[in-house]
Length: 200
Image 1 (tube, one colour):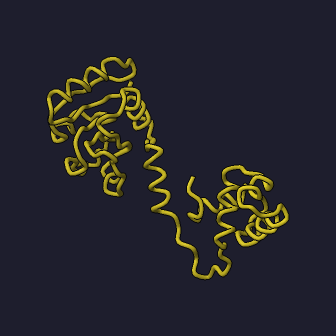
Image 2: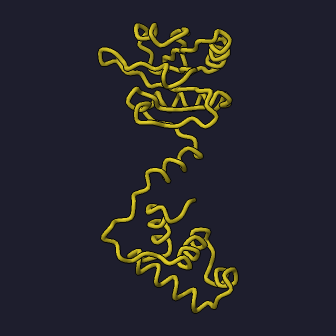
Image 3: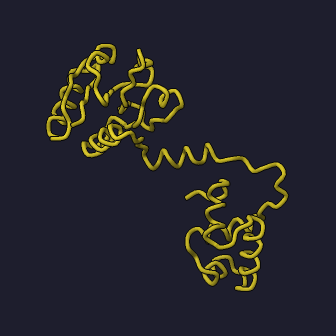
């Protein structure tokens, strides 16, 4: 059983979240309050907080429940501060009931929940910069071929789309594999994603 506390300044939002939680057999409502300050005595497993990151306070005396933060921001963002405060999911206020309950369950299990759109932004933002010692960079044409490889296009399809011969495509693929130090097309695509050359 997951002990859940709700923190929301709006009584209407608190009532809506309470009704949602009441519909789930695996969640026990520990209480609902206007702010997080009164929740520490309850010691819930998870806090479902409707507000902003600024509303959260560092946990006291070593007690740190997992927090599912619901925010008014259109595209809520993960930050290191949020993670340090115990945030394990960031949802927009228009999240569905299923998304909210799934986030609470995941947070109670020690996992973090992230929207796939936000994950893509984080991956691009945290992509490692190319090493300065790296002497082999892909040409613009090789990048086009690599992106088509990532889409699963075969050599003939790549040749047709780019208006070049199959032989030229094979040459570009071999060059890409060599420059990325990859043994297969799949490995080249994986390396390309990791280096930020391809956005999936």
